[in-house]
Structure formats: C-alpha cells, structure tokens
Image (cartoon, rainbow, N blue to C red; front, side):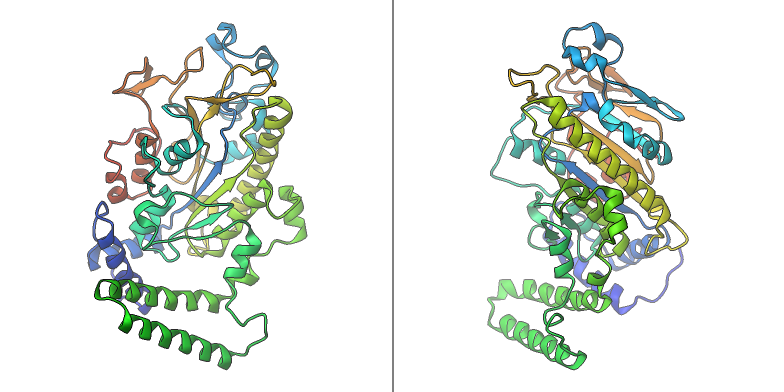
Amino acid sequence: MKHSPMSRRHLLRYSLSTFILSQLGGLKLLTEGEFEERAWAQSRDPHRFLHIFLRGGWDSTLATDPVLGEKRNSGAYESIYLREEIRAVPGKDKLQVGSGLLPALPAFAALPTAFINGLYVDVTAHPLAELYALSGRMSLSRGREYPALAALMGASSANFPSHLVLGGRIPLGETAVMTPPLGSNDMDGMRGMMAEPGLEAGWNVEQTQVLRGMLQDFNKLERLQAAAHRQPQMDSWMRLQASLNGIYDKRLDQGLGADPDRLTRYGVKDSRDNAAMVLGGYQLLRSGLSPYVTVLLKGFDSHNQELTVQKPLQLAFAEALLVLVQDLRQTPDPQRPDLSLADTTTLLIGSEFVRTPKFNDAQGTDHWKSASAILMGKKVRDNTILGQTDAAAHALGWDNQKAVPRTADNALTHEAFAGAVLLGLGFPDAQSTLGKEAVHGLFI
C-alpha cells in the first residue's frame, strides 16, 4: 500500500476517529495505521451512500413486486392491480417494474440495480418499522434507538460531518452524541448552516477571525470548568469546531442552491416537497460535504383512494429519480474528478413496510408485514432479485439463494439486509454490530 505523510486534516480526523470509536463499544477502534489506510483507500476509491426513505409504507405492487404469475389468479390482490401496466427494465430480464415506477425505467437500465422483496417485518407500527428499515435492528422496544446505516458509516469512517439528513430526523442510537449529523427539514436550512455567523451582516475576514478566536477562548474556559469526565467531550467539540471553520471557508452555502432549470427538471413545486428532497440529496453529494446522506420523503401512508394518492406520489418520485441518476452520471465526483458521482455512489431506496394487497373500505391500503427496497449504483450486482413474496403477498423465507416457506430461522430480515449493505460497502466493523450474518448476492 502507498503511504503518504498525514496532513493536518487527516491528523485531526484520526484523533477524532479514535475518540469517537472508543465511545462505541460495538465498533472496532481504529489504529493510526488502519485510519491512514482507510483515508488513502477512500481518496483512491471513494464511496458515497444515499439513502432515500419513503416515509409511510410504499405500495410495492405498483413498484418492485408487481402481480405476476400465480399472484394473478390467487384472489389475494385487488382486481384493479391486474390491469396496471408491468414492464421489464430494458436489458435486465429479472427486474419487473410496476406502473408506479415506470418513468424510472431508464434509470434502472443505466445503473447496476437490484430489487429486494419480501423483507419480513413483524410489527407495522410506524416508529418500530422505521427503526427496522433505517438501522437494520430488529427490536420490539420503543425505549431505545439504534444508529441508522448512514450514522454507522459516518462513525466507522470518522468523517466530519459524519452524515447529512434532509427532510426530518433518523435514529441515531449510540452515535447521537459523538457523531451527530447535520440535519435540516429542507435545503434552505442546510444551506444556512453552511454560512458562518456574521456573513449576512457583511463582516470582513478580520472580524470573522475575531469571532472565531472568541469562540475558541470560550470553549477553553468551558473545558477548564467542566467536570473531569466531560473534558474529553469538550476536546472533541473543540476539534469539531475547527473542522466547521474549514467548512465555512469553502463557502458551500453558495453551491447548495439550485438553478431554476434544475428545479424544473426535478419537478420541484415548493422547498419541502419530495422532488425538492431528491434534488437536495444530489446537491449534498455534489458538495462533498459528507459521503453519507439520508433523505426522507413524505406522504406514502395512503389509507384512502390508493390509485389517486399513492400512485401519483410514486410517479413523481420515479420522475425525480430519473433526473437524479442523469445528474449523478454527468457530475464529477468531488474527490475523484475522473469519475462521476454515479461511479462512486450507492443508492438505497425503501420504506418501513409495504401496503396491503386488498383495498379497505376507503379504497385505500393499510400496513402489511413485508417490506421491499431498491439498490442502485456502485458495487451492486446488476439485474438481481433478492427475496420473494408468495401468491398471497406474504414474505417468503430465503435459504441458499432460494425462496422457501418462511420460518423463524430463515426470514429475510432488515438486519440481514443491512448487514449486507454495510459489508458490501466496506464497513465490516459496523456490520458486525448487527449480530447477524449478512445475506449474500447483492454486491460484487
């Protein structure tokens, strides 16, 4: 391996990483050599992770798990689903797409893509199911949060900011204190955090330096007065503030705005709609601020008028997803300009569960004990289907790469899927904290 002297920036990140990982009992503490090797590997082969979470439970029958084969005659599905269009992704015979995602067919054709169906969910209450989907941890306790996948990646790599969250909050668990994300409900708020205090008032460089010095002196005074057990946390905070000054100097706030043409292409109508969130995910990846981004979309908990509520939401998302993939393919990676963001980014798209195959009295659907997801981009094994539902839409088990009747031992869970994602993207220490062997076949 090629080693180079550690820069001040790498030294700062290393000292921060050793402290962060010492606080996370499940994560392996990096030695200086291991950290330097990871930093070097990331500079040569950057990996980015964009998790798009469709909040509320999306209708996979309109997406990745349409009514095919025995399902058409089972009587388990609403008859109107049988009339919805189904198409294969061009050049990918295994990937059948329902009518809700048809606009995204060129996106699935352009990037390596895998569909994951029949993920077993034993509880469909939103708070617990979100924990399953965002963190991979299976728990019946609402009294504890577990780190989301992006949080685990940020903690494991000691990146600052560890990760970025757009559109709401996510589970952080033991990473909440030492590796908090930068989060905002919309890109206007995120952009505002990138502008240093005093900037809008027109402060010059000298005035800004005075402010930074005052904050530094205040932190030192706070550390001296803090109890002994809190002083290491203050040390960490002071290092983080030094990193924040470096972010301010980059003036990322100027690059996080979207031009009118791009807003139109994504279909943005207001700053907090789903199209704006998808566009925001692209802007954050392009900025290079953090490789790990979570974007939360809203509105998919459709208990009324399924095809006039859920399907338009899916179609609008599919159209924005197509533009996102086009932009990723055309945008150089900020760390490796010779590669595109499409070359360096893995996308995970999913929801906490799917919808019932039959309509309720309001012509809508309810929560169903199954989940589905989409993986796209870097390292994904193309034209892959993992998991399956039976003719009655129940999640099947998964044994030796084959669908089998589900038992307690072979259920394809979020835990096994999350383990595969972390392992496939190069985070074996974070994957090991899940306590379950990862499923195979999703990554190359």
